[in-house]
Length: 242
Image: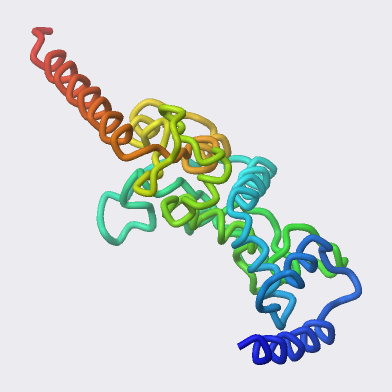
Protein backbone atom coordinates (compact mmCIF):
# COMPACT_ATOMS: atom_id res chain seq x y z
CA UNK A 1 0.00 0.00 0.00
CA UNK A 2 2.78 2.40 0.94
CA UNK A 3 4.72 1.72 -2.26
CA UNK A 4 1.59 2.15 -4.37
CA UNK A 5 0.78 5.45 -2.65
CA UNK A 6 4.36 6.71 -3.04
CA UNK A 7 4.27 5.95 -6.74
CA UNK A 8 0.91 7.62 -7.12
CA UNK A 9 2.13 10.71 -5.27
CA UNK A 10 5.26 10.95 -7.41
CA UNK A 11 3.11 11.01 -10.54
CA UNK A 12 0.68 13.49 -8.99
CA UNK A 13 3.51 15.78 -7.88
CA UNK A 14 5.04 15.73 -11.35
CA UNK A 15 1.68 16.72 -12.88
CA UNK A 16 1.15 19.40 -10.26
CA UNK A 17 4.60 20.91 -10.82
CA UNK A 18 4.02 21.02 -14.59
CA UNK A 19 0.67 22.76 -14.17
CA UNK A 20 1.63 25.17 -11.38
CA UNK A 21 1.85 28.82 -12.46
CA UNK A 22 4.71 31.00 -11.29
CA UNK A 23 2.41 32.54 -8.67
CA UNK A 24 0.31 30.27 -6.46
CA UNK A 25 -1.06 30.63 -2.90
CA UNK A 26 1.64 29.30 -0.58
CA UNK A 27 -0.79 28.02 2.05
CA UNK A 28 -2.64 25.99 -0.58
CA UNK A 29 0.57 24.46 -1.93
CA UNK A 30 1.81 23.56 1.55
CA UNK A 31 -1.50 21.89 2.34
CA UNK A 32 -1.46 19.97 -0.94
CA UNK A 33 2.06 18.62 -0.39
CA UNK A 34 1.17 17.50 3.15
CA UNK A 35 -1.85 15.44 2.10
CA UNK A 36 -1.70 11.62 2.06
CA UNK A 37 -2.58 11.84 -1.65
CA UNK A 38 -1.20 14.89 -3.43
CA UNK A 39 -3.72 16.63 -5.72
CA UNK A 40 -2.41 16.37 -9.29
CA UNK A 41 -3.75 19.75 -10.49
CA UNK A 42 -3.78 23.28 -9.01
CA UNK A 43 -7.57 23.56 -9.00
CA UNK A 44 -7.85 20.30 -7.07
CA UNK A 45 -5.31 21.63 -4.59
CA UNK A 46 -7.42 24.76 -4.05
CA UNK A 47 -10.58 22.69 -3.57
CA UNK A 48 -8.81 20.40 -1.08
CA UNK A 49 -7.56 23.38 0.90
CA UNK A 50 -11.01 24.89 1.38
CA UNK A 51 -12.60 21.51 2.15
CA UNK A 52 -10.11 21.17 4.99
CA UNK A 53 -10.93 24.67 6.31
CA UNK A 54 -14.73 25.11 6.12
CA UNK A 55 -14.89 27.75 8.86
CA UNK A 56 -12.19 29.78 7.13
CA UNK A 57 -14.16 29.49 3.89
CA UNK A 58 -17.26 30.69 5.73
CA UNK A 59 -15.49 33.79 7.04
CA UNK A 60 -14.10 34.59 3.62
CA UNK A 61 -17.44 34.14 1.84
CA UNK A 62 -19.17 36.47 4.30
CA UNK A 63 -16.38 39.05 3.97
CA UNK A 64 -16.66 38.94 0.18
CA UNK A 65 -20.45 39.34 0.44
CA UNK A 66 -19.89 42.41 2.62
CA UNK A 67 -17.74 43.89 -0.16
CA UNK A 68 -20.57 43.37 -2.65
CA UNK A 69 -23.34 44.62 -0.38
CA UNK A 70 -27.07 44.19 -0.89
CA UNK A 71 -28.20 44.68 -4.51
CA UNK A 72 -30.50 47.67 -4.98
CA UNK A 73 -34.13 46.66 -4.73
CA UNK A 74 -33.50 43.19 -3.31
CA UNK A 75 -35.55 41.80 -0.42
CA UNK A 76 -35.38 38.43 1.28
CA UNK A 77 -38.43 36.56 0.02
CA UNK A 78 -39.49 32.92 -0.23
CA UNK A 79 -41.01 31.17 -3.23
CA UNK A 80 -44.78 31.26 -3.54
CA UNK A 81 -44.86 28.34 -5.96
CA UNK A 82 -42.58 25.53 -7.12
CA UNK A 83 -41.51 27.40 -10.27
CA UNK A 84 -40.32 30.58 -8.60
CA UNK A 85 -36.56 31.22 -8.69
CA UNK A 86 -36.50 31.83 -4.93
CA UNK A 87 -35.68 29.61 -1.95
CA UNK A 88 -38.64 27.50 -0.82
CA UNK A 89 -37.72 27.68 2.87
CA UNK A 90 -36.04 30.05 5.30
CA UNK A 91 -33.62 27.25 6.16
CA UNK A 92 -31.73 28.06 2.96
CA UNK A 93 -29.53 31.16 3.29
CA UNK A 94 -30.65 34.22 1.31
CA UNK A 95 -28.58 34.56 -1.85
CA UNK A 96 -29.53 37.57 -3.98
CA UNK A 97 -26.85 36.94 -6.59
CA UNK A 98 -28.36 33.52 -7.31
CA UNK A 99 -31.68 35.11 -8.29
CA UNK A 100 -32.06 35.83 -12.02
CA UNK A 101 -32.92 39.48 -11.49
CA UNK A 102 -29.73 40.21 -9.54
CA UNK A 103 -27.19 37.69 -10.87
CA UNK A 104 -24.01 39.28 -12.20
CA UNK A 105 -23.41 36.55 -14.74
CA UNK A 106 -20.34 34.47 -15.64
CA UNK A 107 -17.12 35.66 -14.07
CA UNK A 108 -18.86 36.57 -10.81
CA UNK A 109 -19.64 34.36 -7.84
CA UNK A 110 -23.34 33.59 -7.46
CA UNK A 111 -22.97 33.51 -3.66
CA UNK A 112 -20.99 36.62 -2.77
CA UNK A 113 -21.20 38.60 -6.02
CA UNK A 114 -17.45 39.19 -6.31
CA UNK A 115 -15.29 38.33 -9.37
CA UNK A 116 -13.98 34.77 -9.65
CA UNK A 117 -10.35 34.44 -10.71
CA UNK A 118 -8.12 31.61 -11.81
CA UNK A 119 -8.58 28.28 -9.99
CA UNK A 120 -11.70 29.68 -8.30
CA UNK A 121 -9.55 32.04 -6.20
CA UNK A 122 -10.96 35.26 -4.79
CA UNK A 123 -8.02 37.55 -5.66
CA UNK A 124 -6.40 38.14 -9.03
CA UNK A 125 -2.87 36.97 -8.23
CA UNK A 126 -2.13 36.53 -11.95
CA UNK A 127 -3.43 39.84 -13.40
CA UNK A 128 -5.58 37.79 -15.76
CA UNK A 129 -9.00 39.19 -14.87
CA UNK A 130 -12.10 37.18 -13.96
CA UNK A 131 -12.62 33.71 -15.41
CA UNK A 132 -15.33 34.14 -18.01
CA UNK A 133 -17.20 30.90 -17.30
CA UNK A 134 -16.76 30.68 -13.53
CA UNK A 135 -19.74 31.34 -11.26
CA UNK A 136 -18.44 30.14 -7.87
CA UNK A 137 -15.40 30.84 -5.74
CA UNK A 138 -13.84 27.63 -4.45
CA UNK A 139 -14.24 29.01 -0.92
CA UNK A 140 -17.88 29.94 -1.47
CA UNK A 141 -18.67 26.39 -2.59
CA UNK A 142 -17.51 25.07 0.79
CA UNK A 143 -19.15 27.93 2.69
CA UNK A 144 -22.48 27.18 1.00
CA UNK A 145 -22.18 23.51 1.93
CA UNK A 146 -21.53 24.52 5.53
CA UNK A 147 -24.58 26.78 5.54
CA UNK A 148 -27.01 24.24 4.09
CA UNK A 149 -25.63 21.10 5.79
CA UNK A 150 -23.72 22.17 8.92
CA UNK A 151 -23.87 18.67 10.42
CA UNK A 152 -21.48 17.51 7.70
CA UNK A 153 -18.86 19.77 9.27
CA UNK A 154 -19.36 18.77 12.88
CA UNK A 155 -15.71 17.73 13.22
CA UNK A 156 -14.43 21.25 12.50
CA UNK A 157 -17.02 22.77 14.83
CA UNK A 158 -16.11 20.32 17.59
CA UNK A 159 -12.45 21.26 17.30
CA UNK A 160 -13.28 24.94 17.48
CA UNK A 161 -15.12 24.38 20.78
CA UNK A 162 -12.30 22.34 22.28
CA UNK A 163 -14.60 19.28 22.38
CA UNK A 164 -16.82 21.00 24.95
CA UNK A 165 -20.61 21.34 24.76
CA UNK A 166 -21.50 24.95 23.94
CA UNK A 167 -24.58 24.82 26.18
CA UNK A 168 -23.33 23.03 29.29
CA UNK A 169 -19.54 23.27 29.07
CA UNK A 170 -19.30 19.53 29.59
CA UNK A 171 -17.35 17.14 27.38
CA UNK A 172 -18.95 16.58 23.99
CA UNK A 173 -20.32 13.09 23.63
CA UNK A 174 -20.19 11.07 20.44
CA UNK A 175 -23.93 11.68 19.95
CA UNK A 176 -23.58 15.49 20.11
CA UNK A 177 -25.44 17.46 17.45
CA UNK A 178 -24.93 20.68 15.47
CA UNK A 179 -27.34 23.46 16.35
CA UNK A 180 -28.07 27.10 15.43
CA UNK A 181 -27.73 29.32 18.49
CA UNK A 182 -30.42 31.66 17.15
CA UNK A 183 -32.95 29.34 15.47
CA UNK A 184 -33.58 30.09 11.82
CA UNK A 185 -37.33 30.50 12.33
CA UNK A 186 -36.54 33.49 14.56
CA UNK A 187 -34.17 34.90 11.96
CA UNK A 188 -36.98 34.75 9.39
CA UNK A 189 -39.67 35.99 11.75
CA UNK A 190 -37.82 38.67 13.71
CA UNK A 191 -34.60 39.63 11.92
CA UNK A 192 -35.67 39.57 8.29
CA UNK A 193 -34.79 43.24 7.77
CA UNK A 194 -31.14 42.74 8.75
CA UNK A 195 -28.79 43.79 5.94
CA UNK A 196 -28.09 40.84 3.67
CA UNK A 197 -24.36 40.31 4.23
CA UNK A 198 -24.94 40.32 8.01
CA UNK A 199 -27.81 37.83 7.62
CA UNK A 200 -25.38 35.19 6.39
CA UNK A 201 -23.79 34.99 9.85
CA UNK A 202 -26.94 33.21 11.10
CA UNK A 203 -26.11 30.29 8.80
CA UNK A 204 -22.35 30.51 9.30
CA UNK A 205 -19.82 29.94 12.03
CA UNK A 206 -20.95 32.70 14.45
CA UNK A 207 -24.36 31.01 14.86
CA UNK A 208 -23.28 27.36 14.77
CA UNK A 209 -22.52 25.27 17.82
CA UNK A 210 -22.23 21.61 18.80
CA UNK A 211 -24.19 20.56 21.88
CA UNK A 212 -24.92 17.26 23.54
CA UNK A 213 -28.15 15.56 22.54
CA UNK A 214 -29.88 16.09 25.90
CA UNK A 215 -29.09 19.82 25.82
CA UNK A 216 -30.26 19.99 22.22
CA UNK A 217 -33.58 18.31 23.11
CA UNK A 218 -34.15 20.78 25.95
CA UNK A 219 -33.31 23.72 23.69
CA UNK A 220 -35.68 22.47 20.95
CA UNK A 221 -38.45 22.07 23.54
CA UNK A 222 -37.95 25.65 24.71
CA UNK A 223 -38.01 26.88 21.11
CA UNK A 224 -41.23 24.95 20.44
CA UNK A 225 -42.78 26.55 23.52
CA UNK A 226 -41.70 29.98 22.30
CA UNK A 227 -43.27 29.38 18.87
CA UNK A 228 -46.48 28.16 20.46
CA UNK A 229 -46.68 31.23 22.70
CA UNK A 230 -46.10 33.50 19.70
CA UNK A 231 -48.87 31.79 17.71
CA UNK A 232 -51.25 32.01 20.68
CA UNK A 233 -50.48 35.70 21.17
CA UNK A 234 -50.96 36.36 17.46
CA UNK A 235 -54.33 34.56 17.51
CA UNK A 236 -55.44 36.52 20.56
CA UNK A 237 -54.66 39.82 18.85
CA UNK A 238 -56.65 38.80 15.79
CA UNK A 239 -59.69 37.92 18.00
CA UNK A 240 -59.68 41.26 19.80
CA UNK A 241 -62.45 43.65 18.73
CA UNK A 242 -61.39 46.63 16.63
